Amino acid sequence: MRCLKMDLFKMRKFKSTYIILLIAFILSFLVTFATMKVNKLIYDMNRQVETENHTSEDETAQEEYEESDINLEMNYQGAEQEYNEGKLIDYLDASLVGSAYVILITVYVILFCGADYKMGYNKNVYGQISHRAYLILSKLSICFIYTLIMHLVYCIGTTVAYYIVADSPQTGAMSDIVMHSIMLYVINIALASLFAAIAVLLKGSGIAMAIGVIISMGIHLTGFYIINMLVEKYLKIKNFDLSEVSLLSARSWLITGFTHKNITHVLILAVIYFVVATAIAISVETKRDIN
Image 1 (cartoon, one colour):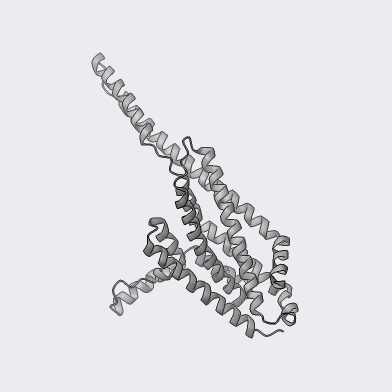
Image 2: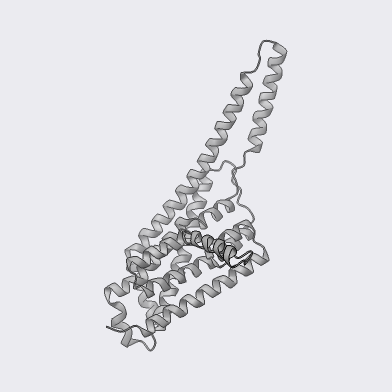
């Protein structure tokens, strides 16, 4: 509890805590706002093209002109009915699975966990605690709390933008929104534990940040794809897919379908990531020289 209290105090005093949350709100708001505006603009442009095509038809005969005018009105009304702004839950899913969201988590976790090594905080408290594992568990708790706060900030930014732009807002089933949010949060705290382990292993260095950003952007999936092809070609193993162990891929599976199979797969994968990352971080921190 002592370590957790100290880390909570540091989180409140850490300037990056508020800067990254502000960036998260602005990004979630602007991306949702711009996406909806662009979709509406594209729809209006297509409708205008259709209108011009109708008005350019043969108008020599009065009967044909009236018929064209009637059809134009009917097509316009049909276009209005066909336009779909989408539901709030669709934009929440899109925001929470975006690379920017994971990158912000990565940056904060590595900055927060790595700051202690740069300031010498860990060396000062090594002799004041019974086991160094408490330091890791405390940092992970802060990462989970911050991930939850950022999760809520992203939802708020997306929701505000949606209701500002939407002419006929549709929220979607509240049970689906809750389920999607919980599962995506589970994946994100598993990712946070991975980034925390990287920060501990490399003492929050620039290399740790680079590795975290590469993972959060999904660049490593390209390497997985190459390995898949090599394994299938030379080892003759069919349907070999390393992406099945990637949390970033798991987030995409959930969006395509919240089936019992996908949910179970994601939960198992998240638990494995958390346990392995925590074990590595504790092992490295326990064996680390105090000097």
